[in-house]
Length: 497
Image (cartoon, rainbow, N blue to C red):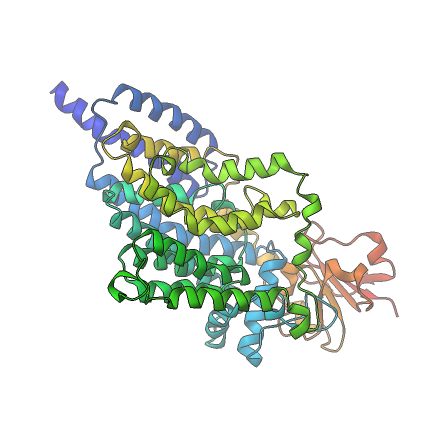
């Protein structure tokens, strides 16, 4: 009987590793539980290294359920931030562009400059026509954007799991590895914090790598080329695809069965690089305005921020430090992430090499594929123990994180969004608004970003903001304005006549 109990306990112990994940997804602060879990799992791993606990089918089902739940939690959390008036300027930009697509067919935004501009001159993101279409079908633009965003994230996770299975990992290990990647410090905060256009490229890049693993060259190349619909930085992706395809045996320029349609892959890579150069370097030639992100690259400033760059790279490699360097195959699968890591490390903007910044999301996700190959290469060794993967999973939530607090955000919902009083503002007046307030002013043709007021030549007629919001104006901005229109928790100030 004691032997039966011991065996049952051994099968149940791995479930402990899922506890921090479950707590996090239901909105409970998981850091201290995760740290205790790391210690317990570490002791179990050491005590059972000769005969580690096996993953039962029930553990895989539980992990898969948490993985499936994650995109829905992302959508719900984003929605609560919208209704609680807590979304930032990026979300306002993408929402306004999506709403404009549904109304006029063009992704116009009024938040970047004094005059309305096409968002595609700021970032090359035709993918916004997808939430624009959903908005046109009747879904409010903020929630259409969130739905497409969560769907993209879910498809990206599915692609990574499919790749893990194709690499030969057991289903439970594959599912847990996807959770390790999805909950990393470089992905989790930004996935939940806001909406960024890079995320829409992840499922395209992920499924491109899956098809490359299956040696289906043409559809893989097509998906690699299509990633550019999300952002201009993906103009480089077909090139890294060709390099990776070459390492996987696609060397013959004549035999279609052995190569990516001969030289077509390299030709497309060259065309994409030329197009990217025209978009970025030739921006002023075709749009009449310099590409404003080029000022993030000042090579004279590369000697500063050395410690931050090192921490960025270390955080990016945390879930991989045991695996890829032990396998040449895994090192080859690191290739897709390299240009994005280089872009971040060569930037003079500290935001681009912040470990928990959204710029780290792309390389962190792509390195997850290399990690899967490396994990398979350690099979049969101590490092491939299921308990090691579970310990890594708990470690991802041992960093300082913010609890999701979904019930609290829902309780705040009716206070901020929607703001019916804002619809009464005259359409012929210039309004400077907090990014979250912009979501209630999508039909207003002259809404501006509040932060730009000191930089603008136009004096707004109305200011709209939250007293404790992202862009609360100082007295130098509010001078000459007085309260004029109560609307929920928003402060509405009108210019004195």
